[in-house]
Image (cartoon, rainbow, N blue to C red; front, side, top):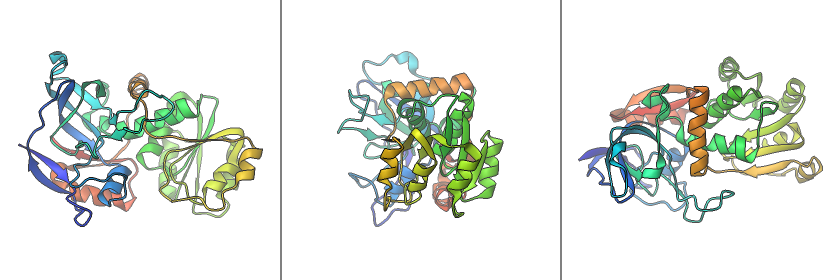
Length: 334
C-alpha cells in the first residue's frame, strides 16, 4: 500500500491523504517512486472542480521526480534505479501544431504525482539533470514544458529578442525569465509586488512594472522601446495593454487566463500592427526532451519558494492559494 493525496468530490475539496494499492506497471509502463512533486494552478483548478472532464475522486499532481522501481513488459529493466523527471503530457498525438482530442495531462483523470508511487509510460521519463535535486527537478515539468514551447516553438525567441513576461513570481513566469536570461535575451516583467520585481531583477530581468499602477504600459515602452515577444498567462482586460507595448510584427503568446476573458478587445490595433497572437498548451514529447536538455546545458536551477512534508499537503495548498509565493511550492514525498 502507499499514501496518495485525494480530492474526494467537489463538495469535499480538502486535500486528504489516503491509503491505496501501489500501482503495477502495464506493458510499456514504468512505476516511479516519487521523491518530490510541486503544485500548479492546474491542481488548484481541479480542487475547485474548475477543469474539463472532471472525474471524482481525483489523485492530483502533474509535476514529479523520483526513482524507477519497476517496469512492465517491453521496457528495458536497466532503467530500474534511475533518477528521473516525468513528462506529464499524455497522448499529444501526431500533429506537432496542436494536441489531439485524446490529449490529457498526468494528474486528472490519470492518477498523478501527489502519491508515493505513480505509473507512467516509459517514453515519459527523462534522466534527472545531475545538477538538480529531486525537489528542484520536480518544479520543471508543467512550467518547463509550457515555457519551452512558448519561447522556442510559438514565438521563436532569440537572444536579440526583447521579451515581456506578465505576473512574475509564478512557476511559468519565473521559468520563462530563467530560460531567456540563459539565452541572452532582454527581459522585462510585471507584478503587483515591488519585492517580486526586485527579485526578478536579481535573477536577470532588465526592469519591471507594477501592473496595479495606471498606465503601466507607458513605463514598459519607455524602458524597452517596445516588446518583440510577450509571454502572458493572465488574460483579462490588461491584455489590450499588451497589444499596445508589442512592436509591429511582434508576437503575443497566451498560455493561461487567470484574470478571465478580455473585454473590448483591441482588434484594429492587433491587425494594423500585424501582431501574431499565439495560444499554447504544454508541449510535445520531443519539446519536453529538448527542454530537459536546455536545462542541463545551461545548468538552470528552478526557484523554490517553500518545501512542505507530504503530510502537510493542506498547508502547502494554503501557501499556494495565498499568491505570496515567489517560485514553486514543493511537496517532499519520500
